[in-house]
Length: 239
Image 1 (cartoon, one colour):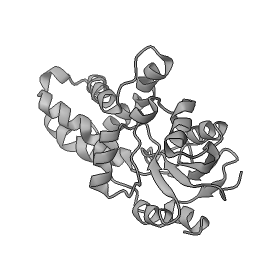
Image 2 (image 1 turned 90 degrees about the horizontal axis):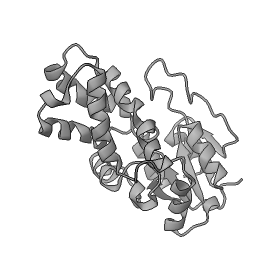
Image 3 (image 1 turned 120 degrees about the horizontal axis):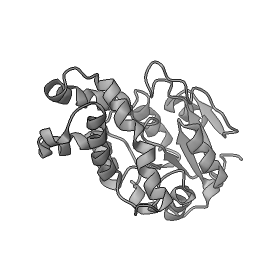
């Protein structure tokens, strides 16, 4: 599949555009200093993130109606506290509510802002994320992410890798699936998008899961493009 017909780039956000692990650890550290000083912020971030797929799977399977990721993050935080031997009942609700929104305050990888600005000269740029609109909006305002539109999961009412998450994004943009390219650092996400007829671009993020990362270190499928980072992707696309 050629990218000659590509009109829009849809970006996975957590891990591909923003560094969730260090961003969450940064915000968890002062919280743990008060409520759990013997706990490692990066381990806590990993515990919190480990519930991401199981929480969404309840919605994918139909055992639970669609709910926004902000709400799932709040529920996942309580579970993460429990797994670290801490009780949410001992912590003021206002602190929990504020920390649960930490996922809105993540920093982009160093190459992202330059890369997206260059890519935007040629393509429509949108997040193709499981994040909800408010989450992605606040993240973009804080980090300066130059999206042309913010399409949260409320738009598709589906969590990736459900086909609707990809196909409804193309529909909302008014383009056929082959005119939309998913840019992601996760091979499974790209495989699901390709199965729906989207173009695909892999951007490697070897430190997403920390120094001991063992997954997604290289492309594992016939993706249209493979890039070192967003700047390399812009170079390859002539932007």
